[in-house]
Length: 275
Ligand code: SF4
Ligand code: SF4
Ligand code: SF4
Image (cartoon, rainbow, N blue to C red; front, side, top):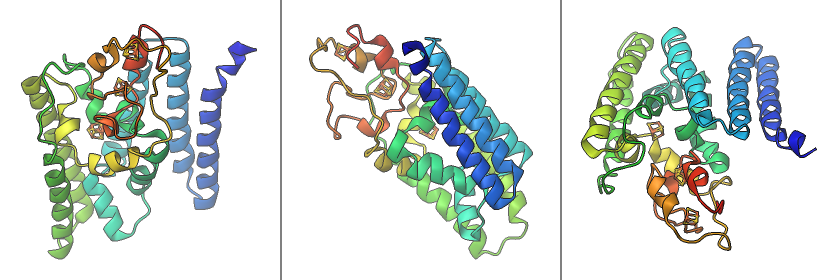
């Protein structure tokens, strides 16, 4: 019975995604929604199943399945700009496209439930950065997180300027912006990772999407908590955290609390199973 019970979670996730898939398919009369949400639901459920089976790379499997799908299928084949510029673009045009749904679900309202799960399990930028050699930061955190507000403002100014200047063939420009933007993100991400000896340096200092993700995830329902009775204050959880979260503090205002990507490295490494 216990064995069956543990598989309820992946099954539940699959049912939720299938419900969304079928509802959107029927109401919008568009089979894309059926395919899209079924695929994502299946990928996440598979990841959960592998995690239950204690497969060490379960998170990376989901990250590759979802990240590659977004980047290659939605971005390059379907030519949807899924970066933040695409979000502004579809918002200004008032079009209800995949990028708008994606931002609403994964990056604006979703984080109220699953925090920055997007960053741990689906982002195609981090999907590549996580292959670099510094999963655990080898240098103290820098105080340059303000850069994210500049990149956020620049992305908005760029798209607003295109509209104000009445530039033609915006679809093509947004597709080119998606390719160039991703190339720049990867290049900057890799350079920073080596410079700061930290795979996630780009996420911590540059990524404009964190302007949405951080405040929303502060209220996340899903968060890592510590069992004080089991904890022996060895500090290992803090040492292995890629995002420098002080997971020994249960308060909402814990150090770097809005950075948690739910990677479960702290849980896996806690010698007392206190997390
Ligand atoms: S912070 Fe930005 S780049 Fe990093 S994982 Fe999250 S969305 Fe991706
Ligand atoms: S690793 Fe576990 S036992 Fe050690 S400080 Fe963290 S929660 Fe406590
Ligand atoms: S190691 Fe723990 S606290 Fe740090 S990001 Fe991963 S899940 Fe969050």
